[in-house]
Length: 431
Image (cartoon, rainbow, N blue to C red; front, side, top):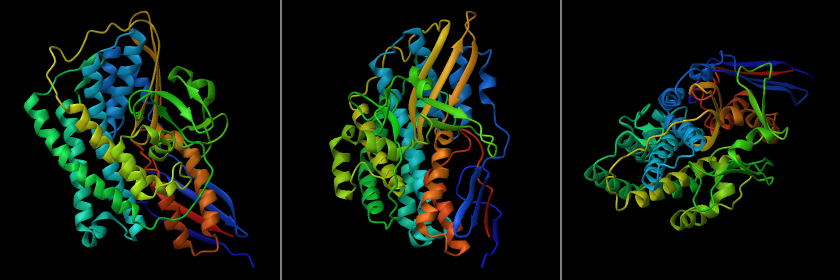
């Protein structure tokens, strides 16, 4: 006997933004599954047209309050590469420290305030904190420390203004850096505890096949530099991104979907860890082994553990880079951006971020194109939802299906302020 059931959830909590997920089930099979993004596109690239390249880093920082450094860093690298300017080792090291700060604050926020309640059976972090007070407190301390790194180098933790084409606007005082480095060293122990705690959680078993995409560096765990590689063998310079990646419009979303050679793919912490775990420092690799995590992992729910491991890595890396810190004579070098096409890619907390700028003979930006990680993951989220819910069991009651669908989506840490807006209602129709 066929039946029709409709479930409407007025607002999906613990994701950043608004949108809808529509799931139609007929005869025990998924008939339609759409991650419907309905808010108007932000068209942020248009704001950049006619601007001086030196203005762009501060403008693109406004795209996201969680990962502004990623947008700034990608823009400055694009223009510096076009100009053929290398600001030097001090600038490169301190920029990487700032990026570590952003990974720490973003990952800590997602684990403790957005994702973790799903795996512990709570509706929100406030309820969860009543039973797991120290876990949540530790997470907030780590997030605050990430913000402190950004504030020290960027002037403020949200929408920092310290990065510029050619370097940084200001070099922090040695005493400030020494004080921060001591706090980072102390926090490594907290990150170790977080990894071990996450490794002890009972996560759903869900082995799926998917393509991983991330930057890969010749020596380091890639953050701000590297070539674009995939688990299918791609090895591309950022300027070659358009040869294999393509964005397209789908009727149910104002955000573009992205495909790699015609198929969905994954960017983000798990993709990075799968492709680059051999580049982690020995201390973090020891934690991978202690956690019993076999890499590459095909279980998307290992994303939370990947984030915890990247928090540990980022702390260890920042401590290393700040050792022996000295104030430079100048924190930046002059850069004259010539006419041409600029490309760059970096690893935002949520995954690969790609920029392309056309600079005219008048020295102003003519066109800009920004492909954020969340839009790159949208097609993959839909594919994951379909595969996971069928494996989970469509015979389950609607509340169980709704909760699991929300868990799958939140597991990707979608960021609407980067690319678009996200879930507002979840609707399941069953006939």
